[in-house]
Amino acid sequence: MTGGSKGIGYQIVKEYAEAGANVVIASRNMNKCEEMAHEISAIGVKALPVKCNVGNLEDINTMFSIVKKEFNKLDILVNNAGVYQTKPDIKVTENDWDAIFDINLKGLFFCAQNAAKLMHEHNGGRIINMASATGVKPLKRMSPYTTSKAAVIHLTHTFIGMASEWARYNIQVNSIAPGIIHTDINSDELGNKELAAKTLKRIPLRRYGTPADISSMALYLASDAASYVTGQTFYVDGGFLAE
Ligand code: NAP
Image (cartoon, rainbow, N blue to C red):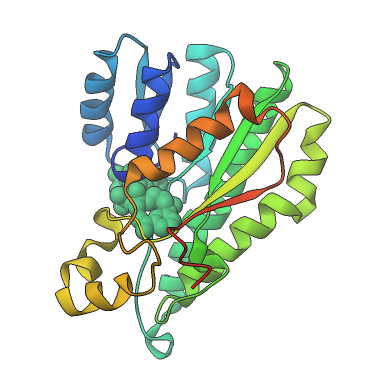
């Protein structure tokens, strides 16, 4: 699990562990990963904390060699690490753009590539990419973020045919595109009462999502119930796209 230290990622880690999976908790903050791994171990599975900045290819390669050494195989990758920024387009810098794309897209691709190599050795697996509903319905002042997430959706569907190219190895690749989920990533915006009320009006179910709304989909996509599902994006957004 990349970005397993908090928010949506941590909720998924917890539910996978409750379902009996050994888990790897990776993020840039090793202390936080260790803390979370300690909590998860109490469930009775192995929880391995790994420091990994997915914006750095060397970190990614090291993380996957640790996974291979510790577990020898990988059944599920949740490509969840992501960063977000709101800024008027006129103020976006090259650094802003590169930072978001390096993490949200380049890092996600190379994690998937590493995972596919490991999965190929052991009869396949599941890759779940965390996209965003804003990848198809962009919000203002979020161009680099929403474009990176549109690319994640595209990558899952067609980019060098991730899903179709790897299907022959029994590797299934799907995306989850959450709507607006209340976590640290958007705490500034949702902490602003006026903006929060305005945003809520765009969600037909009239509530923000919770990490548990997303982990249910992640559980499904990792389960036998999804054994014939690949190359799809699942929108979990309270109706945001329909409004
Ligand atoms: P969050 O609470 O801020 O969690 C983000 C996670 O990603 C943290 O574990 C963070 O850990 C990790 N991370 C960030 N940059 C990283 C990097 N360079 N390398 C490794 N880990 C990194 O946000 P969240 O809401 O749970 O978001 C999780 C995913 O869902 C993201 O991809 C986000 O874009 C997507 N999403 C969220 C929403 C929403 O409304 N919340 C909507 C659509 C999509 P460290 O800081 O310790 O590295």
